[in-house]
Image (tube, rainbow, N blue to C red; front, top):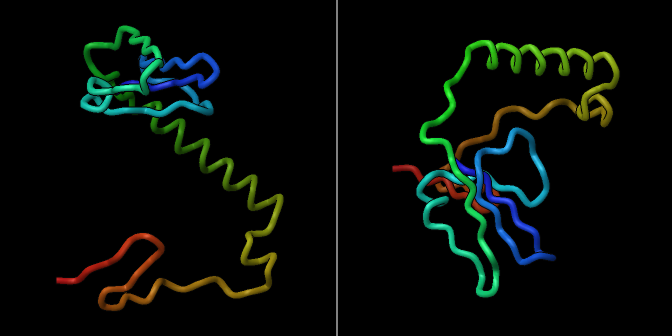
Length: 111
């Protein structure tokens, strides 16, 4: 895995280790796409050293993330009503499944 960062003003793309936070003009790429990256003519690519193996997952990291999401949800529910509560409309039910239904740009096909 790698993060692609680009700067239009400098006509430069940088491919390096995964970013630890989100930034504009940054995209995470899998290994096959990172290794086959090409850029427009006239651009420069800086390829930084990538780690040999993926970072090991720590169960504490996942638990901390889950707790942060839970706390944010509780804080948000105390501070403001949900969009459905603000509009006064009842919440939507599950979507109705039909043969060949179309949802935006995706199409659901049944066997």
